Length: 424
Ligand SMILES: [Ca+2]
Ligand SMILES: [Ca+2]
Ligand SMILES: [Ca+2]
Ligand SMILES: [Ca+2]
Image (cartoon, rainbow, N blue to C red; front, side, top):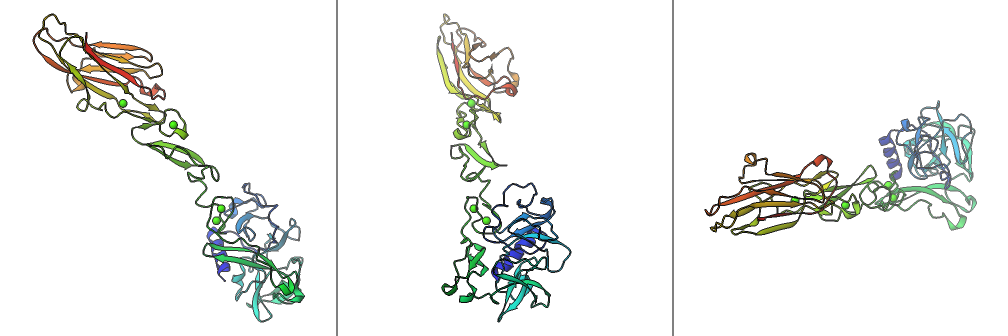
């Protein structure tokens, strides 16, 4: 009974049209496909998915497919024209020959699925038998006979030729529906009477945990549910999204496409998912004047301090923050030393156009715009900073800000520039 109620529950959830399913072992293979053009045999989830407006449950793969209306036995091979429901005789549809219920135990009609199968007393107990009111067509081993169901319905149903659903020496070849059930689900199939040897094994799948393999392993009507479309099975089974295990990188699968996202401070500058967000911005240079990296200081002529391995990464989604540096300058006592502090920026030819400005206050708004340079890729530019009066021992702290000159037109880049401060 568990299978029947599960079938009915599933059917109501998806809300499709009614009718009686029947199918043989191999009946659906030729007609089933995974594309969804709404044609006969195409997968569907609701009536509106089908050109015919009829989406029904097929027992063989326990999933929903489009079918067609019929009036006589003019359905494709391995399909039978049956009434669509027990209560509505006006609509007939093509159902797979194997219903999933034939000769299974029942007490009431609804135990025999959502369509037109009936629960009929055969021998001492109730069994499900398929409706054959249209053209009297039954599977091999069955004959279409008038019967009255337990509920009192009178009509033609497919009755085993041997008179019962039991497997006896006289009913060799009788095929009945069967299920394999376990904690993972319930799969339906058929078994055949082998005579004295009893029933064959049930042809149904043994339900198992759903794995990504194109098969409905747990027979719940969905193939690879919860797996296809994940980063491990993004476009199809076993096509994992790469790069997610790289520091600063995350990947997700959106619409069957691997999408790489970078954490703050990381950039995908090569556009390759497999390398993740391979470009990490330096963190030492500071992002404001007050957090500026101290390059060092000089209290004598002709000093020079350089800092390389600093960068402003750019990728398709954005760019790193501006870099701030500072250095201390003290004019020596000797009046022969000319105080000409400077700052130099060198941009590699593969880099973006950068801008460097300098000032002597932590308040950028007070900086003199004369102390700015724009540096093109492959070039070096110098700012000659404010001289300090000779020989008086004054000292100053210079601040430097380096940023993209044109963020909107900058190209993906992870190259490092070099900044130098000193006195000539
Ligand atoms: Ca499944
Ligand atoms: Ca599967
Ligand atoms: Ca990358
Ligand atoms: Ca930086």
